[in-house]
Length: 342
Image (cartoon, rainbow, N blue to C red; front, side, top):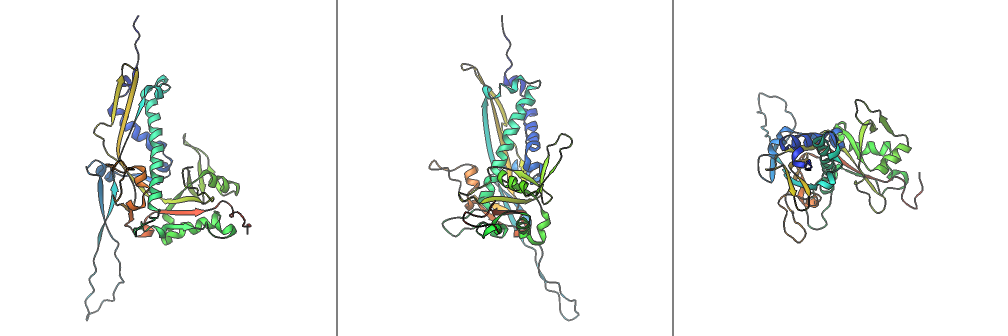
């Protein structure tokens, strides 16, 4: 008696599977749903255009005072200056054996079930990549003279005395106003769960009930909060919170030559799913420098790894500080040891 076995290649249709995973990645990403990451057709085009560094020219704003019109003196002629933002193409892939997907294959719609698992994986990886980029653009180089020039967008109260070092509504407002008259463009927070817990105890976190099948939304100062425990916490209990504007990160999806592939190891009885992605995830206004793509002692990466993205040598601000819609806020959850609360 022969037994018919459904294998991955029977249920995966590459031209359907890949767009489904991309769509579901967006739906599952808290950073995308909060508006921090914005998909952009121009970045889609750049991600598919070839090359590892993708140039995005922009015009500097006009400056200089206006002048009183005169019949004696001609107006002074100003100029407009072009600058360039630069994004790195990220190329990533992952393979899974059938054992990891066996549970999904028991679903009513196997392809959708597998797609959801893969999309959840990529949503987590996008979040990890974004946080590594933040480490890089706000990092300090310990040797040499390079700087990312992002100090203007930092608000560090962690060394202050007593409650002045602690996150609350007042200190968070100070952080928001690091962007001056562009403060209103900051629309969301990313926080460690311990920070959210502290603010919840202080009755500063509000929860908007779920609607239309969407999850409940936490807000602080009226802005949505993304919770991620991979945000930095130092050994002396200094927490890092980020405040973002809408579209602070641009996302573009390119096309890997073979984005989806299935294989079978007949001798082992294993089915394999391979997924590859070429994409851009870029902090608007901070150019990638391509200065150091080293891979330990083994050579150089073709495109940046997460460690390369976390290296400050690879970043340089090109927008005016208040036009970079990201603020880093370092704080404590309680006064430092040995300090009394105010």
